[in-house]
Length: 484
Image 1 (cartoon, rainbow, N blue to C red):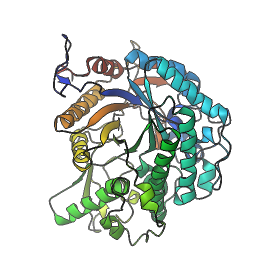
Image 2 (image 1 turned 30 degrees about the vertical axis):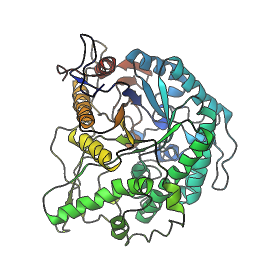
Image 3 (image 1 turned 135 degrees about the horizontal axis):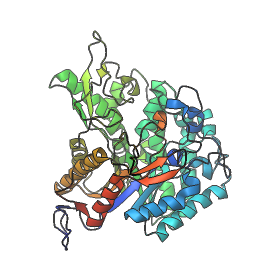
Image 4 (image 1 turned 90 degrees about the vertical axis):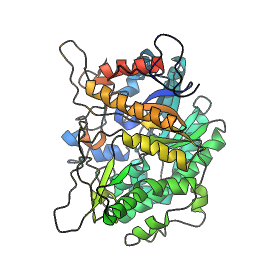
């Protein structure tokens, strides 16, 4: 069936997606699980970071979060009620090998493996296909104490951990995603310091970039050894980078940011090399001597699929150093300090409307990125592995959550995905972020992305209007013209 061909029946959508298109939703372990000290789990960098005063809004932590560790059956039942076809979750490394160190993986924690085994079985029994992310930022603190992602030993231990997970769960999980948004792990964790582990060392951030790339390559090979039938993917938060004007200086700034956010991860994975301009641009920060002979061959592992996370576009402008630098784009992670060797770049605020994060809403970026990936990687299956909006949700007097602003956001972005498919992009699925309101990293519990509202005091779940809307999209296999 072609992307625009309508399905049979009176409820055929105006914008029909291809047959077999995956409709999913996504979460991450530290953001929802809680139970941080139960069944052998040891601290991650986010446990330590969130318990450090001043690091997270409101002093919030993931100690309890959504208590998903104890309530996963209820959460799976909600997904089944909504008709979700696939669930992308992440495995918490500190649950699997809690005694890991830089020189040895340590023993496997059977209680940790058992939790994810029960979750997978529950999903399968509900007719929901699991997709597991192996790393969504909760690095064991013991490895950070030994250098974290600045040390290649972390990449080596990660591959061993990935092989454990794949060997134990690969009989029931068909897709393993190695890393989620390594840009955030490297730059927000080691350059700007707004994410765990909170370091502000530009050279360390670039070392982390390489060791995360190496971790992906090593883990890809490890998963294929342990579960040869499984598909291996990588999820990147690629940026639709636009210069603020047609000037050469702004174009050069956009090229540099594109290199540091997009190509420094795409090129070694898909081409086996780092972009020459990125190496030149960052020469004042590091000599890249942490790239050892043979590393790029290890990184260059063909992926079965590539995941794209998209929320908002990126606007850049060259900064002349005379006026106050404009970093008002509202991202919080948009400051130039997140990008090494970009001290002369600024990130001006973009036109509205905005989400509750202060992020500009512009679905064109999602379409443009999917078309770009289709052009550069025509044989790779593409998935939107995260897309959604934070909104100031409240439970109304009738006990419902009326989030029309989120519905409008999702409608616009799904239409952009549909257009990308019509334009030839091999987009095979869409995972809405997020199933549940949750711990939103440095923002704590102040921002809500879920299509299910969580009352953190009682842990009561309430499906929002957007959840019902998404259920309708899933049931119809597309968007109605009458929808917002």
